[in-house]
Length: 459
Ligand code: ATP
Image 1 (cartoon, rainbow, N blue to C red):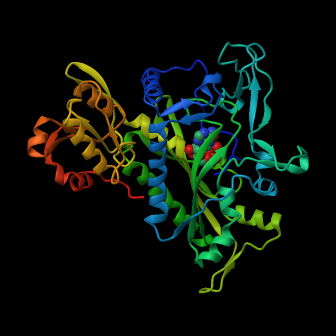
Image 2: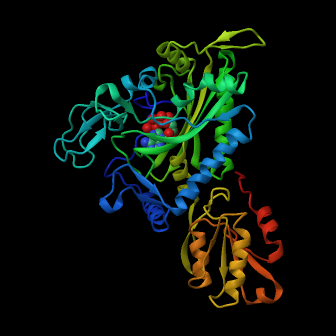
Image 3: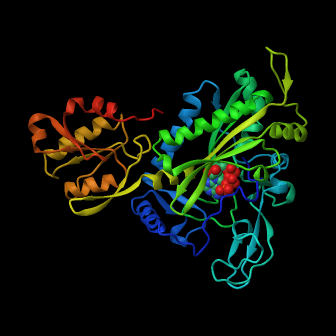
């Protein structure tokens, strides 16, 4: 789905002043994310840049794991999807053909009193609504261009204007023929891409749910017109399962099929995968039957024939496209919210991130019971042995209880504790995050044992 859709299908962000009981938990999640180095406000020391977020040491691992899981499910586990990494800067004609130049806008209103801006489609629709921030009078809605402009070459002139891509999909459409010819694929087949995307959103917010710079994971699946409906249904089921397989709770996930009046003009059907965020349901992904709109428009605008000839059946047609279009950063936020939990341990309320093992930033932590030699030497020896196999962390400061707590709140599934007995029996204690069960294992068996325990997504 592209941003050419303006209106009811665009999920509202919470307006200023809107607080629910659940916001309390969300505050805890956002503060944990910052405190432990998952996510920082972009340009924070300069007061921050609204809608821009920086992913810290744990955040980048987590986000990479989300992207790796998607990439694996798309390209490694399927024989009908191949990958692509297209340029962010594209010929400006691309965005005219796609319809973005004409229609990629949000209606915007401003408060005459406090000057805050809001998306008109997110306010009560009778035209009489007041500013959600101060109750002041609002201006008439005006269209607001969501594409960031920049210039190629040294001259800032109209002729040199290019856009930062507001979706990754167009890089795929313009390469359809290149990829089809290079791989000699027969339809149906898909092209998958992950990459940075930029939208000058009017009201970025809800942490990094709606950002101005974010990452998308998109697949364009090219199919014959007669096969499109079946492929559309199959992709809805497939994508729904992906989130469930990575541990999202079924009660926090739902599919929402768009009503006819919400559909963009080219879409023969769109279904959103939605997650129950602390402030309400929000879109994680849209799966759309985009008909032959994209390749037809690019054929017209580029004057290149992008039709496909099936050598077996002799048919020639412009392919239909089924598009599962997901947000990588937004999915990460959903996994983060879903995994956040609190439990009482020894009379103390503690935070846990019950992340799926394949998404957890660290797979295991190596913890010597004391900072003394020769314990530390053995612990380092184990750490060095594990590192080539898993993403590992090492921690020797403070009590073991505190260190377990620190690993639990960043989602590390296993802690490997080296104690004084380890020096004698060459064994360690392996503690599991969720059950807190402990098991004594010989150091020599540690790598195969952890490999068996971890359902690590291989890269
Ligand atoms: P929304 O209604 O939330 O603005 P959209 O319908 O415009 O989203 P699409 O154009 O379908 O979104 O983009 C596909 C996916 O990209 C979305 O499902 C979402 O996960 C992600 N996405 C879109 N806009 C943003 C944003 N501003 N910040 C983070 N992720 C985004």
